[in-house]
Image (cartoon, rainbow, N blue to C red; front, side):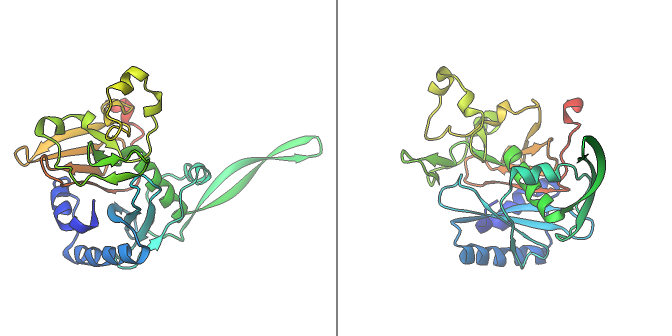
Length: 276
């Protein structure tokens, strides 16, 4: 959700029970404006909150003028002081995938994981138990990146692609119509496309290259991983992810108000295919 319309956005997303105390809201309003100024971001999004056992991580993201360029991610424990997180790597994701359970809420906390490594001694090969230390900060980076790739959402038409390549915010976007807002095909993944290049030429011929340059939610696997609900007498459409419980996307049809927020434990629902 955009930091500039934070109070309205939190109000619209509050139907899922995701709220912030008045002092946290006031701190965020001020500190995110300072983050935008100090880091020279084009836009700042309040990404959400990952719940820890000792403390919670408040997450914000900074975007450059090209909306699909790699985002800078920051975290805070008190909504006042923000620290920049390193970019996610595949190696980081592989390392942290073995860690299960809740976050502690301490970036310097180290998880211990025991793994078997092969050791050669002459012609003999032994398996030796090695204890690997994994910092919680690395796990935080990896989980945010996974959530972004899987369930960050934007409505069709909110961004447009120029003929020269950069992707900009569409200033003429006036919101989806009520009938379009109820369809999953009207929403895209807010990231570089992955499935689009697999489409046939016939399928691509029906797409508008300036608007349909991202992957649609309707083809997500497993099918049924999104819940679409109309609230407030059809004045608000809410999408909730069942794959990453805690991710809520909201959009008020025929208005420019849209955004997503994640408030959860940072754990993926791996049982979803068996629940559908």
